Image (cartoon, rainbow, N blue to C red; front, side):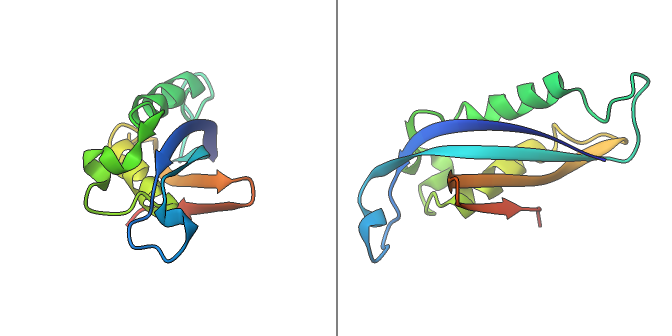
Length: 122
């Protein structure tokens, strides 16, 4: 069973060495979807409590919200592209969202309603 939450954050970035407008500083209201795959339900009939999932995700997303992503240690040497943001979120959430019953399945990051990526881990 896949259990997911959606959230968002606002942040600025620029893509170093990009041959176009995205090389200049600009911002997005990124949309994030985090999915956990549960192999069994707990005694309450849940794969993972939405409250617990939201707390874990918000703890990581809050590090990105209203920031210049290029200034963050995670993106000093790589572009803060949607792909790298999804990978960052996945790496940060993999351990806190893993038990014998469930594990992190995917992280989706969208720059716009019509453009985004889904990362499933290594």
